Image (cartoon, rainbow, N blue to C red; front, side, top):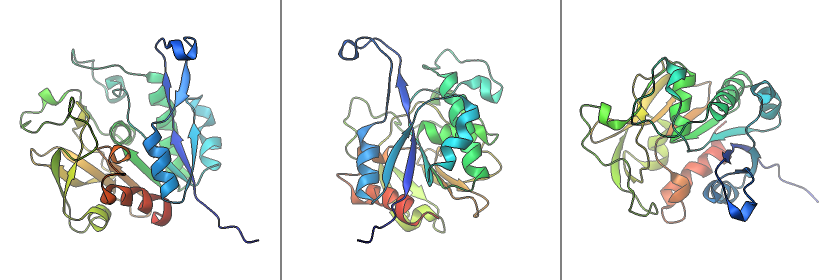
Length: 244
């Protein structure tokens, strides 16, 4: 019997630190189910990468074909040389430093990277960029980027996609996306290029300037909309099947 080789997708997992009676107040490692479902639907095999010693990053990356970084806590401003703003949310330096090591190793080992929300923000910081610690620091802020309390199953605001980008070939040049972030990309790392923007000018997606490094990052959450919006599932399909 012949077996088809499926891409092994490493998902950088988060960790629940707060008390939870269902888990007897123990910490636990997890990933939102939407990532698992989206990768399965695209024909990939998802594997969770637990927060670990950054020195283990090279071993983790060597065991997978591609890396996915998910959403979660705010990125620590210490990593881009700023003091914490009063509006900064919860951070995890342990997670930040481990995922930064994963990004660097994936680039070194030439493994494709797909980042979502916090993952895209951390990607930018890892490569030398900075963030708005809160969107109130952005003088042109006019679009609601945190759709709470609206459910995230459908798009909230529009994004305009650069016509010659990888993303335009997947989504088209106009798309509606959901949105759950109060931080945003500020100074973009030199090795990244912006490829999508919200109506108020916030960068909503990036890719690598060097096309030999397969990197795609979006600010929204396709794992929450891919079951209702086939275009969002195409992001997972492209990442798993074609992003080489």
